[in-house]
Length: 101
Image (tube, rainbow, N blue to C red):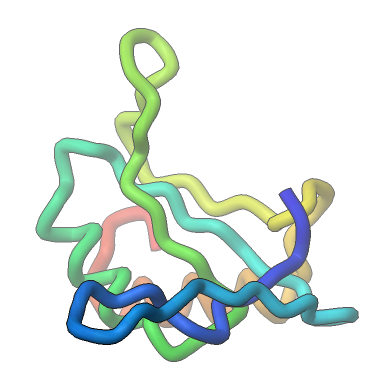
């Protein structure tokens, strides 16, 4: 994965629009993967972090033994998640009363 943020969403409609990715040098980002059986939780978390370009929320697309039964948070690009971003994300998840947050 690379460090990008969505700057323009592709929205179905009358006029053509495109997704444009812009590099965010120095700004660490994280990916929250929500278990696929938690669609309502996924929607709440995605809506909550929609305006924050540092946080991406994804419904787990893995199947079989690889499927996650709990929410997972990863640093985009690998490595350790920045402690400040980790603290921020966990505080936000606690405010949403998300188990494990």
